Image (cartoon, rainbow, N blue to C red; front, side, top):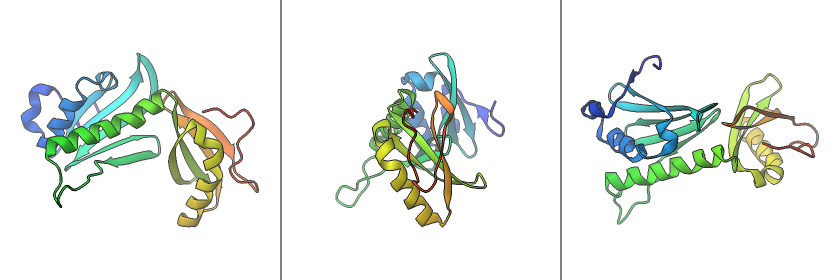
Length: 190
């Protein structure tokens, strides 16, 4: 059991908010969610923790509801959903918002597990986290230095190291950033 939450079963749907119930139902057939644990948090939110994939241990992936939102993350990367497009100045029906949020949450998780996507986490000389980016494996070489420079500019932190991670490789590959900031080693792989 997750500290502070209680295990959740579908028979307890009356104890969660409408958004959380719809998210739970939308995830119910997703094989990745079936390997995870659901817990309920006051006042009626849900947390899904996935730390196994195809029976093997992985770096933990989380998805949780709060209000009418869904957050999904791995390591130092999180995204908040849904990104709602208003129609005639109004949001779409709740069920449609949930479907959209769940599809948008599944895409990066599936990409991370297939290693088509990686999380790049940037750190300063003291080991403090400076920011993260979700990149395709193909974007790594071209995006690393520009993302490091952007994050340094926004945060004012001089970044010295980055880690490339996926749930299948949660410890990641560490790359030092220096005068030629963000250059990957010749044979770097996520």
